Length: 285
Image (cartoon, rainbow, N blue to C red; front, side, top):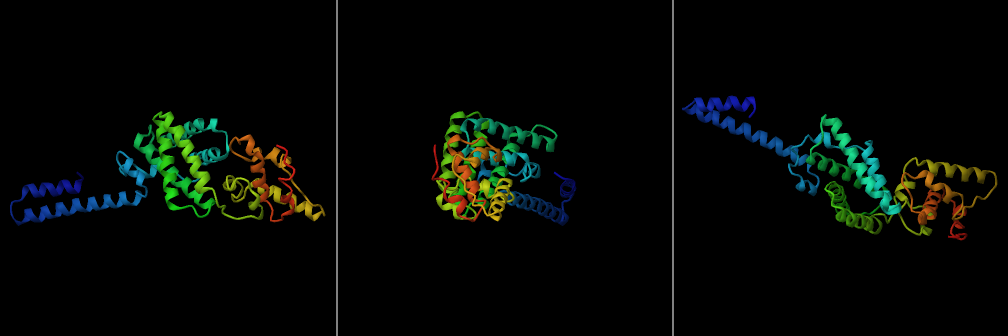
């Protein structure tokens, strides 16, 4: 009860005439206004069906749980997605642990205490929202039901990992990987001429079609400089790009996908088909 309502209650208790009903009406109006404001606040944040799983939806200090693209935990989440589809799966458990640790640190610094379970859950929902938006920007024509399913499974895996449900986490790793590869990473944001010859579209598009990607910028410059000199640069699998591609990735790549990662790097670095055309012809692995 706030000071305004406390004063109104005193007035109601102390009157027995028409003034009583007037003060009672004011008391009820005050309570309704507070309820309406609270309902509006809750509605403004409950963008996710998963909020229904929260133990006290939207009664936490919501701004403290909100994450931004610049937060380290978001970078860790993107790394987790990349590893799911193209990295070494044995690194995934430690990545989940690192995500949880970073959420603890981020929220702890905002609250000046250890975050509550519900606050962590709220942060996981915000993290998943950012990852969903990131993938939507990197790939075209992802169906809304697929995005909602991704959202649900990502929050589930983060939460079940916290609860120590290892078997459930392992199953979700497989399910999320299948969803990403089969239903989400199909059409790149920008169709390049070399995309037609890609063997595993489009597992690396979210990496090499990133704005200001240093690897793409560097290779594009090298190709153009060679052409200005009258040379016809060509690249092949198991060549220099395959040996260098790991240096430009933020996760440990599966060895059998190094050529595919190198090809995506090359395909996004030039519109000229000449440097690309012989890439797969000299494959030796």
